[in-house]
Length: 400
Image 1 (cartoon, rainbow, N blue to C red):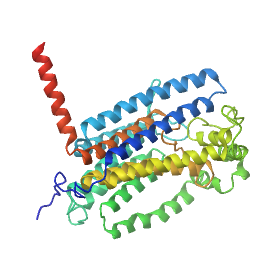
Image 2 (spheres, rainbow, N blue to C red):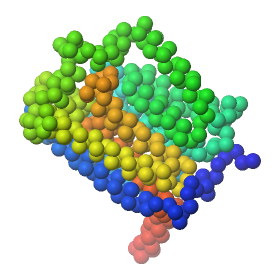
Image 3 (cartoon, one colour):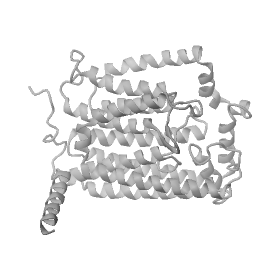
Image 4 (cartoon, one colour):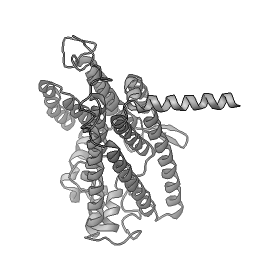
């Protein structure tokens, strides 16, 4: 019996019955462009209380959109198979960057960023992509053995060490929200890859222990986690940001106060252009504007999961699920935080909030999804495409 699944030959559906994934990819790209363009517009509006700062944020975000587009194109031209095959290198690199960030300067009570002059990098964003690639590759490559507890290599322990190590490093940097996001994404992807249900009992059992430990030994973190239950009681202290977020959402009513007419963005709502930009959308465009954003995310998710379910092989299906879960779960957390449903956490809205690392990695996820879609429509497209490019390059060199 083969220990490795031949993911290059194993197809999940007959090619004659496979849907037209090119249409799904086109829809995904259209929704990504809509969300990104809308995000740039709202970024300028949310920071327009200071015109010079607004212009600076807009130019910076536009630059990161360009970098993210280039990264997505690299993922597309290289093909998701290539990046999955070397995902362990990406995982190791992210581990080094997370350790570096842990010993960098503390910002807002966390060690999430690598700071080099004016340049900032948030390694946990890259770690989300690395974990998605690693889990997808491992569960496809070792399909018949990754559930085996008796194996160190090619079994559950190697998979758990790779994912668990990254999650612990993110948590070590005082970024509980992202560590929960990455762990949830990994487990849901493993579930899609047929991980046996008893393996879910261990993290489920650890969760209440972690909660009790935070309650007993980290009262400051516990206070931040529970303030969302009654933000009005701490509206001038720990609940200040959430309370003003709720005021912004409430004052927008159905149709909002009009674009650029927010009052709370002017020195009242901290992080109005980053994690709490949805609050400004609610104030300026009202419930209809927020509902439109939610519908846009839902449409994006429909196209993304359609691509994943139409993948040519198991690895493509798992990667499509992983990056889709990562983006959509982050959107859900952000919407829950700004509306007071979840504890306040620094979690940007994908494609909308200001932030270079998040924008680049969100567009990189789109590049991988388009790669999965193209591979389903034109098998091994990246190999053929790169072969044609090399041939044209040789012809051009000979002519010179």
